[in-house]
Length: 482
Image (cartoon, rainbow, N blue to C red; front, top):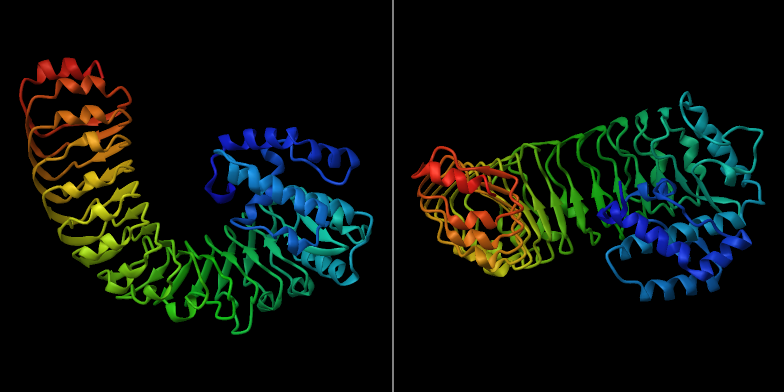
């Protein structure tokens, strides 16, 4: 997983920029830090969306000042990755100051007990045995003055469980055990790690209820326990005043949503997809005033979208696909002025698509496929100049396509197949020069294929089958030039 949703092609540019910074090169020559040379050295990114801040790691003030000043003047497409790499180097550089110190005895005992619970066959680990007391050299360990502050064993082919002695690592800030084959239930004492900010146990085989307690996880900011087999009610963190991201996707959690406990903190992202929630449980999310991302795909929820959800003015991504939601969409949908992505596909929504897109000018992705929407295409879609994907496939939309596509120049995907649209294909589609997928199949369209289709040079997928087009022989010669 790349930090902050960054593109892989940003990596090379950011690393090269790193290697050109003279002060970083000077510190590298001193041996006080290691500059990452390629993307293979960025595994600490797998702690997900956050790493300890420099102040948390007690870095020398001169380096903190330099890094902050450097960050303040960096811009460009790889800015976020560059920022991440700076923190990465900060961690690596400070770890090098601690390499001359042996582990704190408590930490060493906890790490060895932790490793005794593994089947290490196939694991590529350096250290991790009783005869080596300098745990700062061990694979995946990040330390500060001999105390372990970070443990990153992402994708190390580990099998077994987690020893309860791991809770003795009372200086731990980040814990990443993702993409292994660890199982059983994590120890309840994890909640007592008072400095823990980032917890990633995703893609393992943990089961049973997730261990939480009223006064636990006080410093936690990011929790990712997705792709496991946890059961019972979803976890809440009532004592975590800084919780920002909670990802419990692809587990077996059931029941309803405890938004009263979830939304005590200014949580920004809730990812609950792929669980076994049941009944009319989509209530109470209006309490999460700072929420920017809500994903509850494929979780068996029913009912309608209630009014309090529409009050989330900061929401940027909303995905409720593959559920059994019904009813109509409210005019209050226009309140989502910051919305970038909305996916309500594969539900049972009815009624017309509301004329509200004038308030959604940042919208890039709209998927309402496989519902029972009726009426015509909403002309207010033309008020969304950032739209890249419009998917309205498999509904009951009718009438002509009365849209001026000149106002949607960034459109990549337009899928309105399997509806009851009539009339001709609008020639203005020629202005969608970035269009790659166009599906008008299984409608009631007629007339000729527009001559302007020859301008759609990016088009790679086209479906116009089962309509009433005329002069298809002549039209096909045009399509061959696309």
